[in-house]
Image (cartoon, rainbow, N blue to C red; front, top):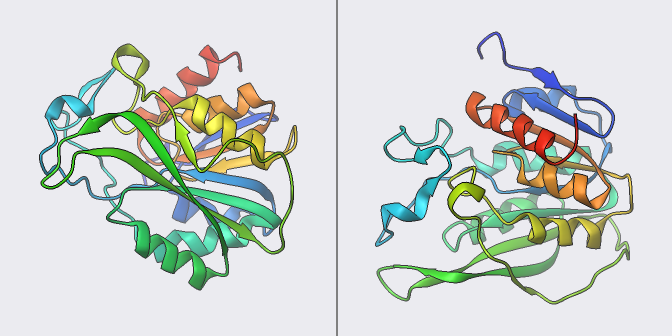
Length: 236
């Protein structure tokens, strides 16, 4: 890691860490986090997808060299999530259809209990070799026993995907969707965590929901984008 890695921005309500989660996890205490929401890195499968689908505020992800970290083995980081999560707390992980089953197998092997498979209806389709794709998936797990908080809505969540200048990261997920899940699964001022925070959509959602947030990001440009986002969201 370069010298700037492990730099920390913020304190109290928001803490952003520029580091590799697999490196930083060793400094995190057992049973210290109330919720984990993340959209983990994995190989992009282009299929029939148009390049324009991965345009974002900074340009075209393919022209700009793609992602530095394309994939981390699920078995390398999911057990760490289980360790740092408190008992009776929840873990949400985004997935495409290709990784759904491997994520589930790893989560169950790590000790998690499966709760729900949520569907994000993106209200837009992406070309595919078979049926055009309109959905992504959110696997929900818990550590330990059931904890009733504020579960509302249904297992299908309709949300407009960020576009144009609103889209800071090529694979960014909608802040309102994340905020809804955060509010359903935590109490005010509890600690939420994203080990692969990208441009900080989870952090913004937590600020707007009145929760504390800790996020880790290995790539410098996304770490900087997260800091900018926190300022725009009213923190800092």
